[in-house]
Length: 97
Image (cartoon, rainbow, N blue to C red; front, side, top):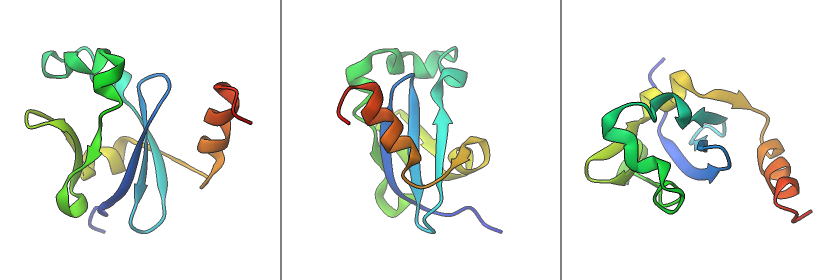
């Protein structure tokens, strides 16, 4: 099966990304695993991390022209979560429930 394209991305607490794929599957990708790499050092800055966007066509996510993650990486190394559960948990953590 080929990797699916990305529909949406939401930055979460703890340097994690909630990635929604076009088939409706949601996965959480923990960016802590890439923070030790030199090219991803800017992600330690919270404001920069939160500026993540979906690339045109849904073939990855990016923060700028030099910093991105492919849909393959996010699909294969993300952890599948039940739709809606992560958003509800995050809202409780920040006191919006």
